[in-house]
Structure formats: structure tokens, C-alpha cells
Length: 454
Ligand code: GLU
Image (cartoon, rainbow, N blue to C red; front, top):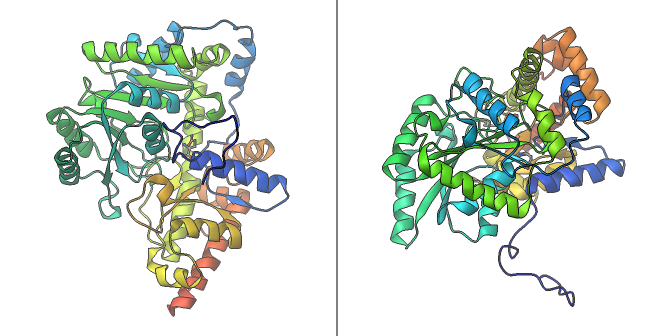
């Protein structure tokens, strides 16, 4: 029940049932706990926390005078640099006119969801804000479950079935969100699946919103292939500087419009939305972002270094779960793992933990580990947690500087974790303790593996 404050009256549209973004809320909460002197292992937020590259920092300083509004779609130079970046890095033939720059990919996804279609198809699990954005817009959602057995890839027969069911109920699913590398599972869609999905979307005349923000944070042998490679006339590709470079707070998002006339019309619609809501992306940030998209060898090398550090840290957490016997699909990109604790459902119930939300609270309360429950990610299965490697041992700028220096000095993964990740090792020990207790309560053989070895 929401209290009433005269004369403030809340609007029904959008706000009713809308919660704060789970990622932003937990990040604020952990910071408050830290400020209050509490020890919390922050595994709940996905932000690249490594140091800013000096060339990028200098570019922002040099452009502080850029104080005029820019075009809603972004400055021409940046749109051109982004188009070239997509050609160079992803082999996509993109004309600069197809590029839209916005204050974070979040705002661009929202404006595309506003501009397009009647009903939105969202995979389960998937990023926390897709559902709430659609809710704000008052559009219906068709959820499509995915499973760990199939690496959380979308299954075409399930998709077909869900679309059919929705249509039987007067629904009209027209827009469909895909995300690879995927938040919250860290999994990557195989190229053959990407191609099959493109064919499916074309056959069903669905628009695809392809969130590829983690495309350069990949660490498997599976290459990143954009669905727009196979379906350029019906795909919007989203990206930005928040993940491959440590620039989340800069809010630089990009969207590549579909090819052909429809794409042009969508670009116009997104421009109309942007110009009436946020006007433009901050000008100094746009000019400074030019260097990030320039292909400068030093910046490209830094993206690669960041990728390798994310890979080592994320794989360590994955191996920890693996050794403890916690079911978890192997991550292939981003900085997330998505283990399931369902196996100990009964033991958890005896502790008063009845779902993944309770489980996340329990871990924070009893073990000082902050995670996010799968249900925040529209999960289809209970008792999953999203665990992010990105904050641990780099919570302060000094730590981030030291960690980068250590990696540059010796990139050996084993020593990198062992000698420079004290909190990562502590949190692994805490998970080991938690799981050992559950196993004990379940009467399972209690073998606590040696976690010191990477
Ligand atoms: N995408 C990041 C995450 O999933 C954080 C930023 C956000 O959600 O807006 O944790």
C-alpha cells in the first residue's frame, strides 16, 4: 500500500508496480553498507571497474569547453567513428547515418521499445531492466523461458509456441529482445543459432532488438556474431562503452538502425523521442568518446587487457562453483555466472529460505555476500543467483590501479588471482563454507576442495 501525500498524486501509468532497477538498487545498498563500515563482498553489480585509460581521460579534459547542445542523434564525427568501429571489429557494413548515439544503451533500448511494436518478447532470464522498461510503456510482454541444459539459448520451438499462445489470446508479439553475450548467464549464442534465429525472425516478421553491449568482453572459442549479419533489415544493434572499457558512468550508448527505408524511419522516430526527452548525449563525453572508437592501437590493446582480466576473474568464480558442486553453466563472456542452489532446496527451506530472493538476502545477511536473485532477471527457474566478478578487489581506484599494474607485470592467471585477489579468495571461502553447511545438513559427503588453486 503506497501512502498518499497531498497534493502529490502518483500516476497510474507505468509507476504502479514499478520497482527500482535491481542492479542500481543493490549497488546503492552495498555502498551504504560500506559507508556504514560493514564488510560486504560486492558480487551484485556489473560494472567494469578497471582504471580509465589516460588517453581517454585526457580527451575528456580537452573537450570540457564543448558546451553547446549537439544533434539528438550524436555528433557526425562520432557516428562515423562508430560506423567504422563496427566494420573493423564486427565485419558489419554500417553507414554513419544508421548510427544513433545516446546517454547509455539503456535509454536507446527504451526509446526503441517505445517506437516499435505492440507486444515485446523477452527471454527468461535476461537483464533486469527489459521487463520494467516495457512495463513503463504499458505494453504486454511474452516471456520465453530458456534452460541451462541448452546453455540458455533460445529454442525456436518454445519461441514459436509462446508466440502462438499469445496470438491465441489476442496478443501481437512484434518485437523481440536478444542478448549475447548474455546477462545474467555469461553464455554466448552459437553462430548457427544466431543464423537460425534470424531466419525465424524474418519468417515471423519480428523486429529484433539485439543487445550486444558485451560483444568485446568475450572469452570463449565461440565468436560473437551479430544477428544483424543475417537480418540487417530487421535488427537494431545496441552497444556502448560501459563494458568493454571502464566507462559505465560516462553513459555512452549506441544503436545501429536496420538497413533500408524502415531503418531510416526508425532512426527518425528515435531522434524525435531523444530530442523531446534528453536532447543529446553530453557533448564533452561525445567528443572524448571519439578516441575510444578510433581504433587507436593503445586503446584496442587496453580493451584486450580488460577482457583478459574479466575472463580470469569470472572463470575463477565459475571454477569455485564447479568445485563446490554448485550447478552452473560455463560463462563465455561478460562478467557473470549464474549458479543454481536448487539442489539444496530442502535445507534452504529449513533455514527459512524459500526462493531466490530469500537466498540473496540470506547470503547478504549471514555471509556478507551481495548477489542478485534470478527473479530480478525474469528467471524461469528458482534458486538461481547472478554473481558478478566485476567489482571485487577493484572497489576503490587505488585497488584498480594496483590490480592493473600487477596484471601488466605478470599476466599469469593463477598468480594474478592468488597474489592480487584477497577478497576474491575470501568470498570463495565463504561460498565454500555455505555449501559445506548445506551439504552437511543434507547428509552429503562433505569435501571442501582447495580453492587456493586456480
Ligand atoms: N548492466 C549492469 C548489470 O547488470 C549494471 C547497469 C545497469 O543495470 O544499468 O549489473
